[in-house]
Structures are given as structure tokens and as C-alpha cells.
Image (cartoon, rainbow, N blue to C red; front, side, top):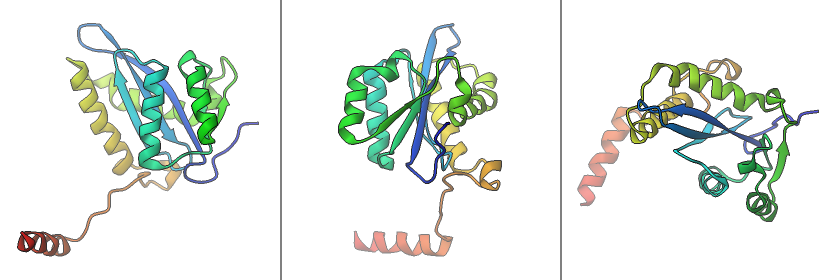
Length: 179
């Protein structure tokens, strides 16, 4: 029976997505989401992603968002690497590996990856890896802060909060006066 997320930072999930730049050269994306909030915590874009790159991306996300209790993935070598598993053990994160050939067991992340493909990757031609990183990060920000999610009552997972214009103007005036 698959563990269901109960609160923020309870269960994170990660997986890889593959795409190509205009010249046909492949690149990989590591997508990491919080299953409860549906927020995409990071999308790491590289020509090649190894277990050390996965560890770095996950550690960076943990610094920004906190440490999850569980992290779900398939049994790919980058996710099952001894260094990554030992690090998770040291910081108290439990791994949840899905059964081989059962992507539906990582349904939240598979759904996210499908949206990434449908809403961005299938409609873009990336001329360079730098362009891919930039556009993918812009899409991730939009996904988290603007795009409505039916599972969240048609709200985004991490909406931006903005101060009313008057308060912003007062804060700006105060900062300038302090200079």
C-alpha cells in the first residue's frame, strides 16, 4: 500500500525527464515535488545527471524548504546509489522505492512530469542548455505561483503574496530615506 502524503514535507518525490536541444543533443531534468502541496521544489537541468548531482539538488531543496520524512523514487542507479542512501540515513529521510515497472506508484511526480511535457517541452525548441534552464525555471515559477491546480481547489501550490501598492511605496520610501 502506497504511503499517502499527510502534510508539507511529509513525502517528496523525484524522477527524471529527458528532452533534447535543437541540435539533437539530449539533456535530463531532475524534477522534485512535495506530494502534499504539489509544489515543484526544483528542476535541475543538465546534459548528464549523476547521483552526486541528485544529492546536490536535493540538499539545496532541503536548505530552502526543510527536510522531508520520506522521498519517493524509482530504483534508478542515481536514486539507489550508496552515497545518496547513506546521506538520507544520516539526516533521517526514509526512502520509498516504487516497484520496478510501476510508474503509477510515483503518480504525483509522473503527473507533474506529464504537465511539464504537455505545457512546455512539447511546444518549445531549445537552442541551448542555458535557454532550456531559463525557460524551464520560468515555467516552474508559473506552475508554483500562478497556474491553478484542480486538486488544490484551483489555486496554485505556492501563490505569490504581494503587498498592496501603498505599503510597497511606503517601504520603498523608508528604505530610500535610510540611505
